[in-house]
Length: 436
Image (tube, one colour):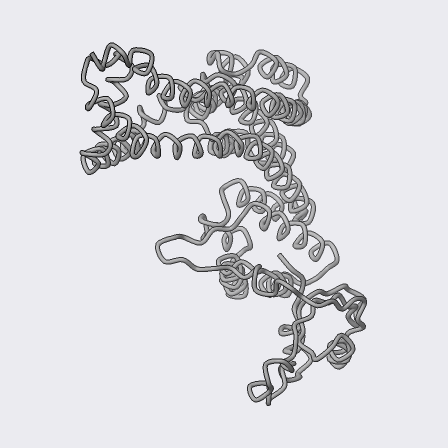
């Protein structure tokens, strides 16, 4: 997300493009450079963007001609790095951070009394993401055609999930759209921050796993066959670990197409199994029971549970709709199923907490806080407490995971690679017997 660029500013001012008409004939050494600037507009807002010029003073003069007062002008060394690339076969995505910025800026403009159509147009022009920009333009057209903002947003589930749509709809009904947007921005920012922490914790073990895989492939493809040839010339019977390693190497080098087919079939089969309801439930149940990672995933889901329930409850969304939407944000089919079961129970007149307690995966503290909230009529506060508590728990778990994973990965490398080396050199201790 960026502020308005010079190009969009020139359209508002009615001036032509900032690039000289004879730029194509300018020698390469004298072509205008790109400068990054910050400037103050006539209404006092701060804008940022790019402008071309022969020097900083020339770029500043161009900015002034646009009716802006430059605050800073610096040479841009990465003008093209931020541009979105479109790769065939890959679907464009809108990141949570981009949505958080849109929600916060949208709330600011609505609170300042900016008309809805104008606010959507400004957000469209400021977006660097092509999908988000196109979506905002379609939303603006729908609103201009008479649709409500929530109806316009609901037509784009690829960008805005049901949580976002429900929040906007509740804000429209209560006449507090700016407040709801601010809450949504805060929720998205907290979610993005937590996701980044988890990814940072998992980045190291994943990188080490790729490195170890590369070492194993190299040894199986080149090192083991060389030793196998030497041992064949010597004759004799090789130790069992060495025979197993040589057999695996032969399978990998001589029947590589078969190995690739087996891997592809396995991956496709697992993915197909995970798409089934029973497979997804089983897979998510396994993930929650994994050492270290399972605890981190559970705490992350509980943080999302508390945060989402709190935001929707405070916004006045009906409890049945709140439970349904929250079940879609947990990221785990087992926990989502429990929440949907609790929703069915609430529809029958029962309370939430006893039904959450039926699933042993929901921590006792969560059940107790929900119970207190239902008895005291303060569910929104209890859900907020759950969200904040487990966000802190996630931070603590991530720090502990990062401290523990390094020695574990070193031990893993030692066992796998070291075991292969030992298996290769075992026959050396019996070289005399092999020669005889």
